[in-house]
Amino acid sequence: MFTGTWMMDFPLNDLLQYSMILSLIVLLLVVVILHVSANTVDQTRHEKEKHFLTADGKEESFPSLMDPPSLELSVVVPSYNEELRLPVMMDEAMEYLEKRQKENPTFTYEVIVVDDGSKDKTTEVAMKYTKKYGAQKVRVLTLVKNRGKGGAVRMGTLSCRGRLILMADADGATKFADIENVEEGLESIDEKPNNMVISCGSRAHLEKESVAHRSLFRTFLMYGFHFLVWFFCVRGIKDTQCGFKLFTREAALKTFSSLHVERWAFDVELLFIAQCLEIPVVEVAVNWTEIEGSKLVPFWSWLQMGLDLVLIRLRYLTGAWRLESERKTQ
Image 1 (cartoon, rainbow, N blue to C red):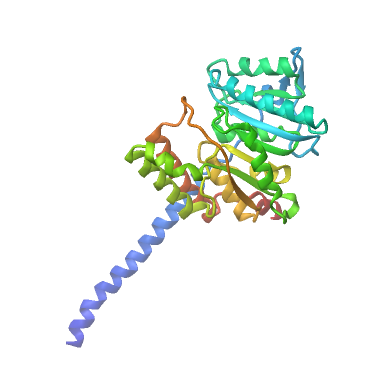
Image 2 (cartoon, helix red, strand yellow):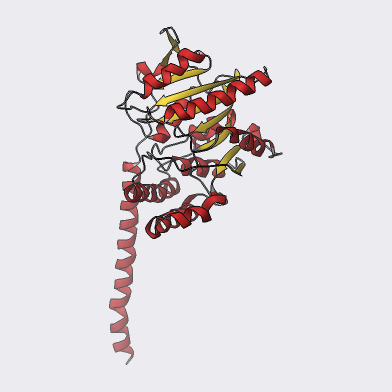
């Protein structure tokens, strides 16, 4: 009986060993694939992206985010084929900003419209505001090729002069006056390590109403995406995707320096980076309206974003991507 038991256990032990070896090989292959496919973000600018046009057509160089701030607020507006929706947003934003400056002359601002390789007349539409308000207040950064929303926001942010930097969508879905809400959120944080803090506009308070108007399939996709965000990347933030976020200059420099994702899931990576670096993040309710003309394709965009969430976690976990602070200390 002892001999028979030993003969039966031997193949089982071999099977376990082979399974462990196979698992290690698969794990190694996954790590190699994650490293090989982890493209480094190209932060170099084409010569045409280093300059903006003034109201009279002269070229001037963009500043750097590493320079000291010279304005109170910079507003970055990523735009791709937005010739129709951009004017509504810009009219509202400029009316608010001009009124605020008139009431408080010490308030200074700029709006940077980033044309993300559009195929329509987005740049021409944006330049009308430069001609109306001047290049000290409105600048247009036209990217030579389409980078994606995250890439457009990053390029615009790296060209800012503001002490505070607001990311605002070109569709005007969020009322621009709600900047006061996210500013209050920013100021509500008492402890700002190295003056770093992020205030995120949030539509979470509108979720019940949106579910009532959405199809069952889109509701399933929404909750599935929220679960993946929570499970893999960011916790404590209910709405990571609202395109209305306010950064201190120091927080923007720290987070955007490490950003890798240039498409729709870039918001999640930004907040993931912030939480890894223990940068305070506050979530503030804002008014939001569904605007027609979204560039998101319901199923495929959500699928791509879900895949990006998994890859974000795995690439940081395996060391394929590293935070800027980690690279600097080595």
